[in-house]
Length: 103
Image 1 (cartoon, rainbow, N blue to C red):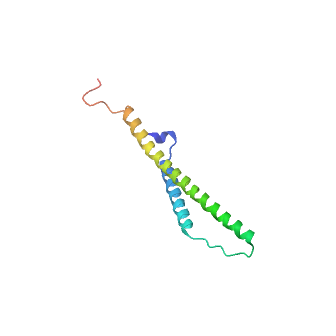
Image 2: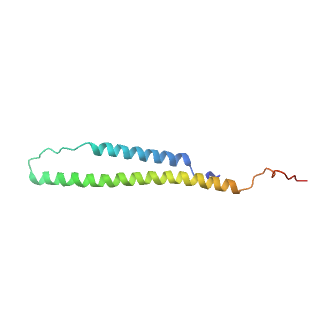
Image 3: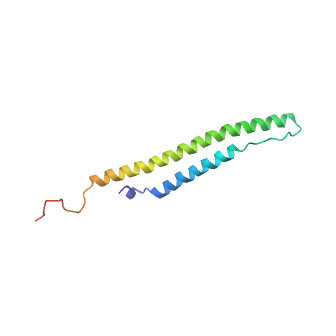
């Protein structure tokens, strides 16, 4: 029913699955500890540590955003199913009503 409005349920489900996979990969990458070797320059070492700290902080925000988007897409699929069922139950069918005959 609601698919008539251009909703591609399979595409949305696939996008949510892919986002969940991206989040898992980000988490896996984030768990790997990065060990910075001294460069011989205190300024460069400090800059690298600051960069690593900032990247970790942004990665956490990215994982949160990806998870939230996947959750929203799952909600879209659920909402589509509810809308489809609601529309389907309210629209008339071409079948005659039980107990009545058209003469």
